[in-house]
Amino acid sequence: MSGAVRHWALIPAAGVGRRFGAEVPKQYLALAGRPVIDHAIAAFIGHPAIAGCAVVLGSADGWWSDVSAYANHPDVLRAPGGAERCHSVRNGLTALADRAAEDDWVLVHDAARPCLRRSDLDRLLAALREEPVGALLAVPIADTVKRADAGQVAETLPRSALWRAYTPQAFRLGLLRRALAQAQARDVVVTDDASAVELLGLRPALIECQADNIKITRPEDLPLAAFYLQQQQLDVQGRSG
Ligand code: CTP
Ligand code: MG
Image 1 (cartoon, helix red, strand yellow):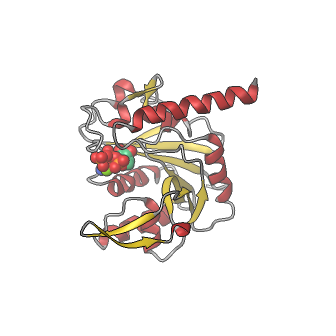
Image 2 (spheres, rainbow, N blue to C red):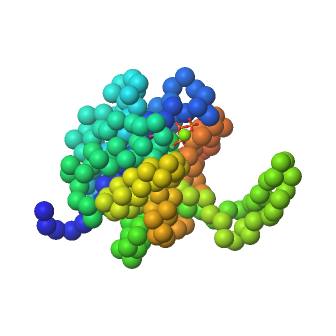
Image 3 (tube, rainbow, N blue to C red):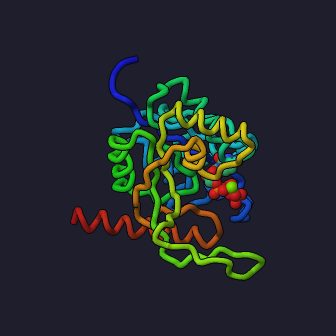
């Protein structure tokens, strides 16, 4: 195939939401009139730069087909989940490889992260033109951070160098496949995609985003996400009014 490099979204959604503790995995809870996962997918589907989207679902998933408006969307393909997030992402990459080229960009974005702004996604996409390795959205840490040892402070870490890693995290399909395969071969369970690429000795770029791009982890995060979505809506109305 010839032509420009394309961009794909990969949404890992095979987690069970243990820390949240609801009966339904958190990505299927209702938020502002639709499931959390639909907010995450909506940021990509319909974006002119995104060619398609892979959604990774757990084997016991009985919700996707019933609740997601994207269940039968022609640009959304499904992949089976794995034991940890990194295994789920690997499966999603395998599914994408049928349609995507080795050099295409894959933007991995948590299903549980429903407040991604179009402006932050566009900033990440723009950064990829300058970043050969890849890039991730991130937020500088605002609090002072301590390293603990047996319940006491062992060290105060220099805050200016610390960032929270968010998603999307964007890498070339081929590179991310190799990176995750090598992490698994070394028995390292990475909690984000950049960590696997870092293990290869490469340095992804940190792209600062708004702090409202939160991941829903615990029950108190759901009303916070609803509040952020409402504020984003007001921002949009304010601009067009
Ligand atoms: N995820 C996945 N496959 C796994 C584990 C997690 O696809 N085996 C996905 C989750 O569905 C979520 C994202 O990775 O969208 C981030 O993971 P996390 O916030 O840890 O979600 P859960 O694993 O569901 O939550 P917990 O760790 O509290 O059980
Ligand atoms: Mg988890």
